Image 1: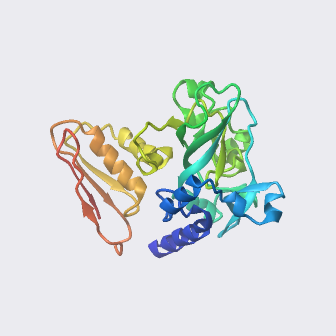
Image 2: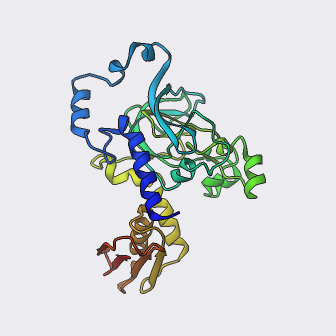
Image 3: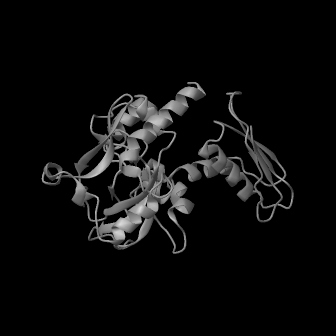
Length: 305
């Protein structure tokens, strides 16, 4: 797929999201206006058409209806289904590169009406009776993976391989050889869970994965902990960086994943020696931004070509 097509897809996804993402911090404009509405006690829901408010279809979300067909629609509000669940009011979310696979119809077992999105954070508005970790009002970042914390893999730290959160794990194992755990908004092959590009989200096993956000940090500073930054960090961790190496990160130019990997490389190179990170692309027509990143204990430079 060429870079032009990727740009067009991203613009289409952003256009679909714009009808409700206005005012979501870190995604698009309108934040101060929306916060002022909330301060005055107004709600978006109160302005919806009467037939929607009476229908039982409450929140707005981005919904998949087929290849290249994602719409902003009203869908049923999430409910507590398990005593360890939590419901959050989404304050920020992001579009991941993995969403392109769904947009292009590559991921099997997506059903018309599925809510997409897996990079999400928000404020807890309801918790299940057995969830002793979270309370109403907590701000949390929600990981892409859904993990029980109790199975063989979770106990050993391999949370993405959770054996309990994917009810269709046999089908996934048939297709891929191994079955991952459940994932938000990523087909019925991976649990059929509603995604987080919505106003509200049910978080299963919310006492295991979600990260509480400390006071003083805004959404833009922590949202990428949901998926993209840990992905880059894992790649850097696999490299076993000691300091003094030259690290090549091969991927899309200006991709957040590539930059997350670069930042992670620098963070792990705690030696006084210099570590250089360079990421590249197979599309020579892309612009060539360059920037320097200085680590705390090492002199480092990252270049994007």
